[in-house]
Length: 123
Image 1 (cartoon, rainbow, N blue to C red):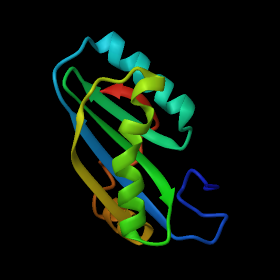
Image 2 (image 1 turned 90 degrees about the horizontal axis):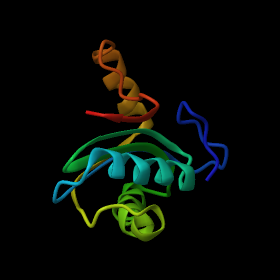
Image 3 (image 1 turned 180 degrees about the vertical axis):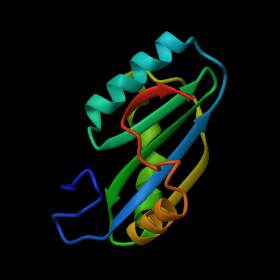
């Protein structure tokens, strides 16, 4: 899945900006941050990861034929990496998958609130 930081695709597939929110029983911030940093190492395309004791929000670009495929892949990320990253047994509570054009329109409408912020950080 080759892609640029700005959401440009090198494979010719459409790009989708994904925001996945997971939540569950509270865990210690240090434990969660360590797991999320492992997730970023395993999935280096993550743009931003925000977290609190009982929820996390992952933002990234993904390549997929259509929005259905991008959403299906997003729904699997937490579960696919739970054991290897030692993530809590949380459930997906929200997902947003939007096309590149919509990201750019929103960015123009809200320049003071960027959609893309790199790194792992608390809410």
